Image (cartoon, rainbow, N blue to C red; front, top):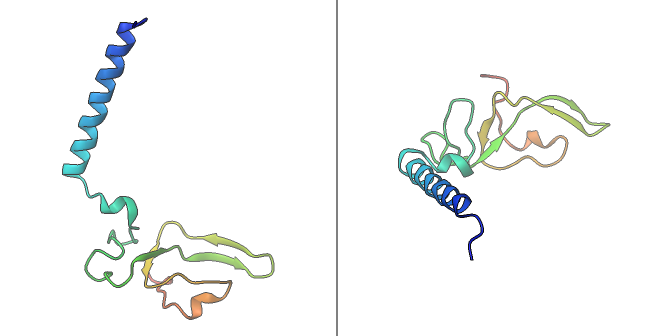
Length: 101
């Protein structure tokens, strides 16, 4: 027995609107942008030409304090890399191009 039919109708209309927006987004958008990173040039890491062999997004450090293990990153210019650096001085084994933008 339905106690509030108006709320049920509004809920149904809301579900239909959500389904419409979802389908429109799938047909007009690029879903790869949801699970692949975008570098500072707008290329999709691991997908776009020029970065197909670099599937990971890396945010370059703007300030690094090794003794306190604190890191400030430049979130305005991420780059695509072929593997993620590990540890405080690991950028030595991963070629990054953080200085140019």
